[in-house]
Length: 105
Image 1: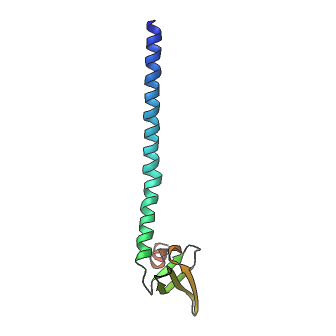
Image 2: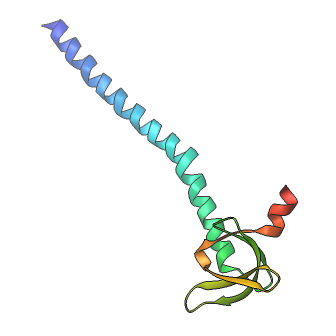
Image 3: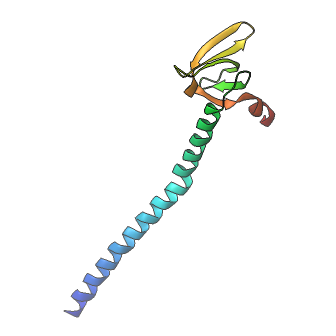
């Protein structure tokens, strides 16, 4: 009888240990994966909201250019990619400041 009680208590303790282990794994996953990604997205949104004409940018497709015009009504940005060549992209596809990227290279 005593062995059955001990076995039952051990099984319950093992279940609690498993729950604690799963919670620990989820916390570690959040700290190393989700949180840095959220911070990066916040920085990108901040950059997109602070765009100005004349800013050197990189689009989501990897195209380097200079912002010529920002249209807040339809959330578009005109980007000059070569002398006289202007493309229109959605503001959410402008990801990085090209001048800071060139300095890091």
